[in-house]
Image 1: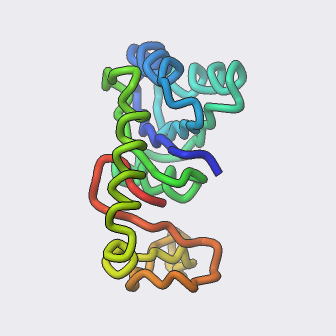
Image 2: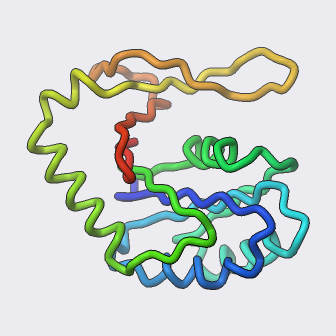
Length: 165
Protein backbone atom coordinates (compact mmCIF):
# COMPACT_ATOMS: atom_id res chain seq x y z
CA UNK A 1 0.00 0.00 0.00
CA UNK A 2 1.35 3.42 -0.97
CA UNK A 3 1.01 6.46 1.26
CA UNK A 4 -1.07 8.59 -1.10
CA UNK A 5 -3.11 7.85 -4.22
CA UNK A 6 -3.71 10.92 -6.37
CA UNK A 7 -6.75 10.75 -8.63
CA UNK A 8 -6.68 13.02 -11.69
CA UNK A 9 -9.74 13.21 -13.95
CA UNK A 10 -8.81 14.13 -17.54
CA UNK A 11 -11.15 15.27 -20.29
CA UNK A 12 -9.74 16.78 -23.49
CA UNK A 13 -6.74 18.18 -21.64
CA UNK A 14 -3.87 17.36 -24.00
CA UNK A 15 -2.48 20.91 -23.55
CA UNK A 16 -2.17 20.45 -19.76
CA UNK A 17 -0.99 16.85 -19.36
CA UNK A 18 2.75 17.53 -19.64
CA UNK A 19 2.66 20.21 -16.92
CA UNK A 20 0.43 18.07 -14.70
CA UNK A 21 2.76 15.07 -15.00
CA UNK A 22 5.81 17.25 -14.21
CA UNK A 23 4.13 18.55 -11.05
CA UNK A 24 3.45 14.98 -9.94
CA UNK A 25 6.88 13.60 -10.88
CA UNK A 26 8.54 16.38 -8.88
CA UNK A 27 6.68 15.61 -5.65
CA UNK A 28 8.95 15.16 -2.64
CA UNK A 29 6.66 12.40 -1.37
CA UNK A 30 7.90 9.45 -3.39
CA UNK A 31 5.50 6.87 -1.94
CA UNK A 32 2.79 8.04 -4.32
CA UNK A 33 0.58 6.50 -6.98
CA UNK A 34 -1.19 8.60 -9.61
CA UNK A 35 -4.37 7.37 -11.22
CA UNK A 36 -5.39 9.26 -14.34
CA UNK A 37 -8.97 8.79 -15.48
CA UNK A 38 -9.30 9.48 -19.21
CA UNK A 39 -12.96 10.43 -19.10
CA UNK A 40 -13.91 9.75 -22.71
CA UNK A 41 -11.57 12.37 -24.20
CA UNK A 42 -11.85 12.99 -27.93
CA UNK A 43 -8.41 14.60 -28.29
CA UNK A 44 -4.96 13.02 -27.73
CA UNK A 45 -5.25 12.98 -23.93
CA UNK A 46 -5.61 9.19 -23.70
CA UNK A 47 -2.60 8.53 -25.92
CA UNK A 48 -0.42 11.00 -23.98
CA UNK A 49 -1.44 9.42 -20.68
CA UNK A 50 -0.60 5.96 -22.02
CA UNK A 51 2.87 7.20 -23.01
CA UNK A 52 3.50 8.55 -19.52
CA UNK A 53 2.24 5.35 -17.93
CA UNK A 54 4.69 3.38 -20.07
CA UNK A 55 7.55 5.69 -18.97
CA UNK A 56 6.73 5.49 -15.26
CA UNK A 57 4.52 2.43 -14.64
CA UNK A 58 5.51 2.30 -10.96
CA UNK A 59 3.90 5.74 -10.42
CA UNK A 60 1.27 6.26 -13.09
CA UNK A 61 -1.82 4.29 -13.99
CA UNK A 62 -4.47 5.26 -16.53
CA UNK A 63 -8.07 4.14 -16.71
CA UNK A 64 -9.90 4.81 -19.95
CA UNK A 65 -13.60 5.47 -19.58
CA UNK A 66 -15.76 4.75 -22.61
CA UNK A 67 -17.90 7.81 -21.93
CA UNK A 68 -17.76 11.22 -20.28
CA UNK A 69 -18.85 10.62 -16.68
CA UNK A 70 -17.98 14.14 -15.54
CA UNK A 71 -15.39 15.02 -12.89
CA UNK A 72 -17.28 13.36 -10.04
CA UNK A 73 -17.85 10.12 -11.92
CA UNK A 74 -14.21 10.04 -13.00
CA UNK A 75 -13.04 10.61 -9.41
CA UNK A 76 -15.28 7.76 -8.25
CA UNK A 77 -13.58 5.41 -10.74
CA UNK A 78 -10.22 6.53 -9.34
CA UNK A 79 -11.31 5.96 -5.74
CA UNK A 80 -12.23 2.38 -6.59
CA UNK A 81 -8.74 1.76 -8.05
CA UNK A 82 -6.80 3.61 -5.33
CA UNK A 83 -4.52 1.58 -3.08
CA UNK A 84 -3.11 4.44 -1.00
CA UNK A 85 -3.49 4.96 2.71
CA UNK A 86 -4.83 8.41 1.78
CA UNK A 87 -6.47 9.71 -1.38
CA UNK A 88 -5.84 13.13 -2.91
CA UNK A 89 -7.43 14.80 -5.90
CA UNK A 90 -5.89 17.03 -8.52
CA UNK A 91 -7.35 18.48 -11.69
CA UNK A 92 -5.28 18.14 -14.84
CA UNK A 93 -4.92 21.91 -15.23
CA UNK A 94 -3.72 22.44 -11.62
CA UNK A 95 -0.19 23.54 -10.82
CA UNK A 96 0.91 22.31 -7.41
CA UNK A 97 3.95 22.86 -5.23
CA UNK A 98 6.47 20.01 -5.22
CA UNK A 99 6.01 19.52 -1.47
CA UNK A 100 2.21 19.60 -1.44
CA UNK A 101 1.44 15.90 -0.99
CA UNK A 102 4.31 15.37 1.47
CA UNK A 103 3.00 18.23 3.64
CA UNK A 104 -0.60 17.04 3.42
CA UNK A 105 0.41 13.47 4.22
CA UNK A 106 2.46 14.52 7.27
CA UNK A 107 -0.35 16.76 8.46
CA UNK A 108 -2.91 13.97 8.01
CA UNK A 109 -0.72 11.48 9.90
CA UNK A 110 -0.15 13.94 12.76
CA UNK A 111 -3.84 14.80 12.94
CA UNK A 112 -4.89 11.15 12.71
CA UNK A 113 -2.56 10.06 15.50
CA UNK A 114 -3.62 13.01 17.64
CA UNK A 115 -7.33 12.22 17.28
CA UNK A 116 -7.13 8.46 16.73
CA UNK A 117 -9.94 7.41 19.08
CA UNK A 118 -12.32 10.14 17.97
CA UNK A 119 -11.72 9.40 14.29
CA UNK A 120 -12.63 5.77 14.74
CA UNK A 121 -16.04 6.76 16.03
CA UNK A 122 -16.72 9.48 13.43
CA UNK A 123 -15.39 8.21 10.10
CA UNK A 124 -17.56 6.41 7.60
CA UNK A 125 -16.78 3.06 6.12
CA UNK A 126 -17.78 2.75 2.47
CA UNK A 127 -18.42 -0.76 1.22
CA UNK A 128 -18.16 -1.23 -2.51
CA UNK A 129 -21.13 -3.30 -3.56
CA UNK A 130 -22.67 -4.23 -6.86
CA UNK A 131 -25.90 -2.49 -7.77
CA UNK A 132 -28.21 -4.32 -10.07
CA UNK A 133 -29.37 -1.65 -12.47
CA UNK A 134 -29.38 -1.17 -16.20
CA UNK A 135 -25.91 0.47 -16.10
CA UNK A 136 -24.19 -2.14 -13.94
CA UNK A 137 -22.43 0.63 -12.01
CA UNK A 138 -20.88 0.25 -8.58
CA UNK A 139 -22.07 2.33 -5.67
CA UNK A 140 -21.08 2.85 -2.09
CA UNK A 141 -23.15 1.83 0.91
CA UNK A 142 -22.29 3.98 3.94
CA UNK A 143 -22.25 2.90 7.55
CA UNK A 144 -20.41 3.94 10.68
CA UNK A 145 -16.78 2.88 10.74
CA UNK A 146 -16.23 -0.57 12.18
CA UNK A 147 -12.58 -1.27 12.96
CA UNK A 148 -13.35 -5.01 12.88
CA UNK A 149 -14.69 -4.89 9.32
CA UNK A 150 -13.12 -7.67 7.27
CA UNK A 151 -14.55 -7.01 3.81
CA UNK A 152 -11.17 -5.79 2.40
CA UNK A 153 -13.06 -3.41 0.10
CA UNK A 154 -13.57 -0.55 2.55
CA UNK A 155 -12.55 3.01 1.83
CA UNK A 156 -12.37 5.27 4.87
CA UNK A 157 -13.04 8.93 4.25
CA UNK A 158 -12.82 12.28 5.94
CA UNK A 159 -13.53 15.65 4.42
CA UNK A 160 -10.04 17.04 3.89
CA UNK A 161 -8.04 17.56 0.67
CA UNK A 162 -6.22 14.28 1.33
CA UNK A 163 -8.66 11.60 2.38
CA UNK A 164 -7.94 8.55 4.49
CA UNK A 165 -8.71 5.50 2.38
